[in-house]
Length: 331
Image (cartoon, rainbow, N blue to C red; front, side, top):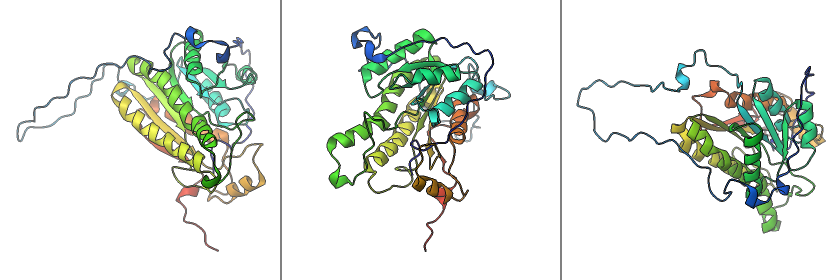
């Protein structure tokens, strides 16, 4: 059951007096030479870590924990879920029925300055509806990701929250469902690029700045297919989503001393207007008895993006109505 290709329609709440500054940006119109970033190199700047002590404590000595509270989230009391003033980028938010759109709405309501991106100009319609800023870019192209990063920095400031939600199939890059023996190498690579390489390239573009500033949140969209279970004909998708979990955990450990938390959310069957009868039946068969909605997934993402999730990193949160923990029903 694939998380990001399912999702329910949520009507955006009306917002009074929203001023939307239309910013038309298309990464394809920006040459790689104009980007200030070297797209082939990681973003610069990790704060130096203190050297570890090699001396052992004296036998019988009392051990005590010391917290460096300079700039630490530990001294925030109470810990807030607000994201006031923080710049948040949500990828793959072009559909009004999807998880990306629902996440953008939630982060906006938490006070974040939100940027959304997709591969088509329909993103500007979604941005206008939400009162946020929209960008167009192919996130499988490292030069376009570099140009996107520059554009967001110029328009909104440094990205502090990144939600890697991109991964939906499109008319230009349709979903391929076939057994491994019949899967071409180009089809395999397309699925890996769409679901895994996008998360890698976007993370690489922003983690350096997050580490340098000492705070950041990255939430990747995995799925139950791959990390938890698998379905026939979906080997490439399952491999990509399992790879997202591996990327999440490795990146979490790389950034754990820099105040940057990295987690992933794995949706199960999520209802959208595009859901098929088979997918709806799968949702009805979960222990909760219905498919999930994009807003329910977005709620989990928003929590992991917030300061309240300061002690959670390298984790996968499954949002599937309990389906993955129930034993198979034999008939």
